[in-house]
Image (cartoon, rainbow, N blue to C red):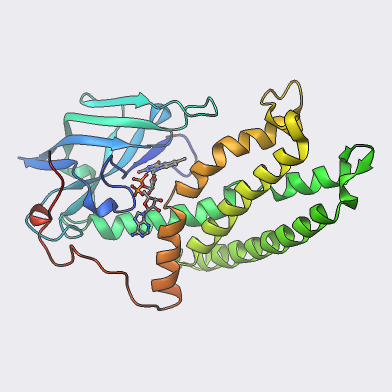
Length: 289
Ligand SMILES: Cc1cc2nc3c(=O)[nH]c(=O)nc-3n(C[C@H](O)[C@H](O)[C@H](O)COP(=O)(O)OP(=O)(O)OC[C@H]3O[C@@H](n4cnc5c(N)ncnc54)[C@H](O)[C@@H]3O)c2cc1C
């Protein structure tokens, strides 16, 4: 996985379990030395290119939702695994629906204890937010290049006080993100794991990326909607970000979920009410069907 010889995907989210991923319904039932998986995942990035996936399943609905989960690795090319790409508004096909129809997984593919899947899932989610903090587009370097070079109506945009104000504000956020990311990487390099503060990088970077894309396309005026890099690479870049940046605010946990994590785990504020606490998963009321 580290050398990228095998491509992996993360099979957590389901149609009725995104922010509340512990409410997922994909079942894994034990049959001798194997497990049989049935259910549906959604928004699985890169599933169409993946050799393997890490899949979070429900193995015991009689205990609370967090305790009845088990994590497996799965061969994405095996029988019983069906991948259907989802087309996005920017024209790309980043993610997929994945269906399991009696997909058989050997017990040796189980990651961690039966019922211990939530612990592994949390480690993966926190590492994902750290990774997103480091690689997600912020738009700042491209915006800086643009401010240095672009003239509108014969005037350098660098002279515009609104542009200068935004530049200063986004620079301070960008510099803060870089420092935070390096501090988190240092902690991981020393043997630690990414903490809840990874949510801060994810939240700030994703919001800034969308703000920069929207602001820049408005600066360009009607030409801002050009999406073809052969006509105008700069305009196409920011227009592409206008269309994809809403997804970055959702991927790896939404803004609201990031704020909840920061409030509870970093600032120590009271937990939000959790109506399903301590209730067996099978007894949690659900809608019809
Ligand atoms: C580009 C992209 C890539 C993705 N890749 C993957 C992937 O590879 N694997 C994977 O498993 N998933 C992936 N996802 C799914 C992603 O994790 C979910 O979309 C995300 O967790 C939100 O879940 P949801 O879409 O079901 O929205 P919901 O959970 O239904 O949320 C709907 C709205 O309600 C708000 N909300 C929900 N709960 C609360 C709360 N407690 N407090 C306040 N507000 C709340 C949310 O913030 C949101 O605005 C990806 C998503 C995107 C956009």
